[in-house]
Image 1 (tube, rainbow, N blue to C red):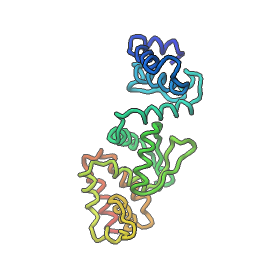
Image 2 (image 1 turned 120 degrees about the vertical axis):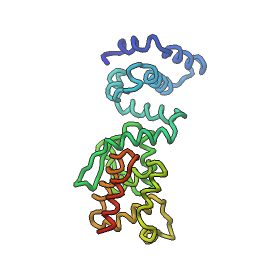
Image 3 (image 1 turned 90 degrees about the horizontal axis):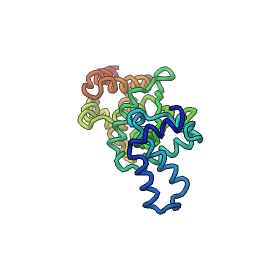
Image 4 (image 1 turned 30 degrees about the horizontal axis):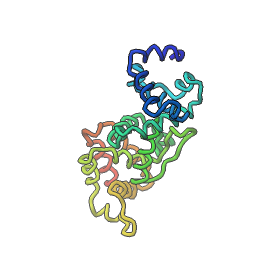
Length: 237
């Protein structure tokens, strides 16, 4: 991407200009606020640029092109995502599964970090973590997610197909899970599973949970035998 002229050439044969003019005319010429104009422009560029559909540019690249800041572009892209009704929870889950496969172990295997640039997917991830195990910590920028091995394992379970999820949860005997249940504040099945797993793993809970999560991701949810081996190993200790 060199300059705006290159981008104009790329979108010249698309519906970019027609849709842009339609947006201005339908709302009434001059009635579109400045921010809405910017959101519309960026959204249509991302939609119609032939090279960006499958390989969207970084915020920095678009910011340099449009002479603004990466933070502003990030906020605009996040808002575009929230406005798109086709980007539902199913879409978020699919995107998250791909992202989790790029996660890295840090701090001796007790913490895991990964990057989520898309604000919609990032908020969806935070929702799943809070529901099922804990809180999210951020790194030096809000796209960097850093969570405990237990929270990461709970997140991986949350995006598993339901049948595989139940299969994995069922590997811990019910009597062990019952000991971890709190009548005053009932836990989700995933949280109950992770609490039971952590109690059985003891001091190694963080590392074992991280190993469990990566075992699940490695098999791509199709065969969870390696994950089951991790659980059975913990139960034998």
